[in-house]
Image (cartoon, rainbow, N blue to C red; front, side, top):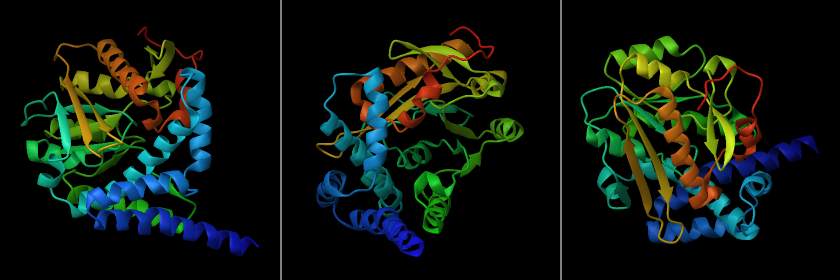
Length: 303
């Protein structure tokens, strides 16, 4: 029975991480998008995850239609997996024709801290950054198998994504955990960093209070402080998705060089708030939202 269960989960990973997304990437997008929508409606992948995310989101944004919300949540997860292969098989020109841009990237030739959210699907952003002349690392927690699946195939998929980074315009992943020295070195050497702050924070990350969806939330401030100490400008961007047309939406806002840490975090929270009110089902962090919105006894700056 145990072996049968492991086999079932391995087959699920094989189909969900490799076969279905690769098939979509091999098809014209006008055919692949309807296939992703069909998977989102009928395939069991992401169903339990969508149910849990809906329960959390409904606490903060009541009154939404559960069926539509969950379907779109599952769709964006499928889009994210398909993008792993679409970014490898489609060139920059293909992507640019399918991205609507609001705002402008900062000037190239210097280090930038580029902040985004666990919202939407944006693995294609590396091609656009590279074309603009911004060489950026991706700052993230080292993934484990349970983030993506249940075993060896999930780890293989994670290694595939890591292998793909430099091939789609990124300077590669930089994993957190004792990374302050590596971050400072990268910024000193002229590299940029792409990072996400919409996640639970520990006291060592110097959490700051912000307002999000009309409530108090905590966002880690240490990375912003490191950038401020290096006089590195901050740009905030988001990568949206139009579920009807399949087009992408890139929104960019560069803050004034003099913006302080609290100003950066407040603006980050305001833009995340706007994205959540626009399409809360595209946020991948609902499963940890209780820790983000919880106000603890930690010493925090006033946001």
